Length: 260
Image 1: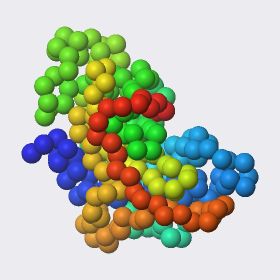
Image 2: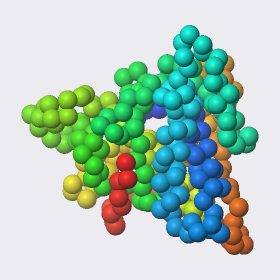
Image 3: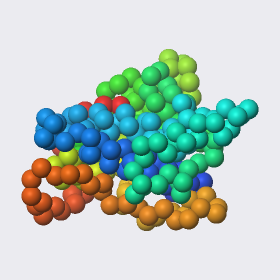
């Protein structure tokens, strides 16, 4: 079994794929609704930053970790805050993970979460250019420098050992969840994958899994299926125009910026 399939199976069986999708879609809906062109938000930059920050907050909510981690002595206190400000069309109850299922596991200022052996960080990219991300930050560069079991080693073993010694933490089981939002079409993209240090202008990933294009998963046992929601809608300032979903490119081209 490939590493990608192992991750997808394990995350799906434990409700993580549904939780990560919910965090993204909830954040995208709020970002689109709160940053309207009539208020001066005319570019993707503000919405992209808003999406990134809101997704961190939403992931903490759905995992009941970070600021939303319940006090073991009074576990019911503050539970109403989990649902405060959440769009009723994207209810939290169907995807909510039990406390301790996922924990916060940041690395040098990069927000991260851990489930079992797997950690994932967040990144953003220009819509339609997920394969062209440049891992510019030191944290993401060192994560992308790790070996993938399904592909030949990018570096000799001694180089990986040097990177591990420099960073002081095991990054071998660290993945990246990457997201994008196009405020013009209101389309969004969401992927999870094993990043690749693409100094040769090749793809930014060893493998990549489309979290919005995948079929719905049943989540953990006893939880109803969570539909893969359409791209969140927000009020438009101009008449609707025909929109065609654009798949992420698979060939190298113009560089995009890693904002994670």
